[in-house]
Image 1 (cartoon, one colour):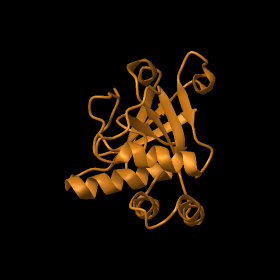
Image 2: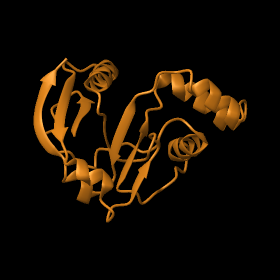
Image 3: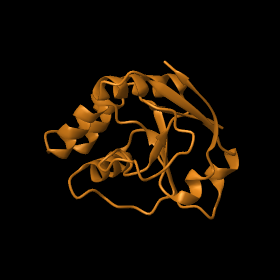
Image 4: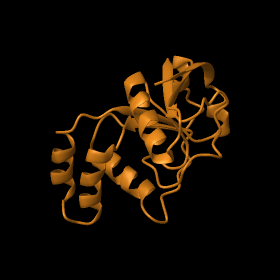
Length: 161
């Protein structure tokens, strides 16, 4: 499987130490199966950091990693209440700590995150939030949360966007 990571630098040796807290699936190294999604994030990061480059790093992993029974993997198959509660738990102050090696599921992009905030603040209940979230186009993300799985990423190349 080919994976992509958007940044302002080439990331040939992924590391967990640079991951931010309070993200969709908690502190980890985030990738996507969609090059255009990584390109979009690289451009956003370039703007936010006022950097000179937007870079996508490309990796490969064995498909069997996602079905390895010795790993603790959490997979979300779309926007539902369990995904919503997990994302809210990971993003809020005093964020949810989990012991998953890998987490796979939809990205809470800016449009989606507005709805997540309305749910978290109690303005929307879960069914209303999920109904609204399903109207947005979502992209996928695969986040790596342990050194064991991050070592499975094989760097292929990087390119500027």
